[in-house]
Length: 138
Length: 75
Image (cartoon, rainbow over all chains, first blue to last red; front, top):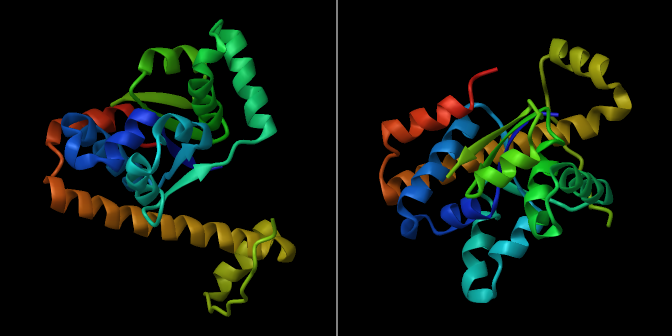
């Protein structure tokens, strides 16, 4: 499978509200630009939406980002959920980090992936030893 | 849920057609083409979105682009 850029909640928020997010938005735009240069897919794991969708006032910007901008959602599957659980167990993290685990499990479904995240420490812990995954802090 | 489908008739160089059929077989052709079209469409859309953001917020600084490139070296 192709290379991918995986966006976690901080990156999604930064791109959805780019005019209000200063440096965060610039960093997210920078990695999005490199993804475009590398012809990579850009994906948002479905569980990330549970962290960024907080009702109509906030959701409109996220909906716009995910419509016609070349950024698609990875639907949650049983296999993905089980892989996320295994990552949590291996990393000795609680299910409070479940969304981070879904982000890493999604990245592992690609040949190579970069994760744009506001939480690099936990993402690095969950992806430790996985050479095909790189972490980009926004 | 089953997606509705549309038939397209396109012309491609015959060498390309042969190579694709060799790679995916006649039965896998539609899926292969649909995946390729999706990828190209997304790429076009992403390019337009990036241009829109540049126009709204200005160009990304060289140091931020360099930082992103360091994390994602060419394969």
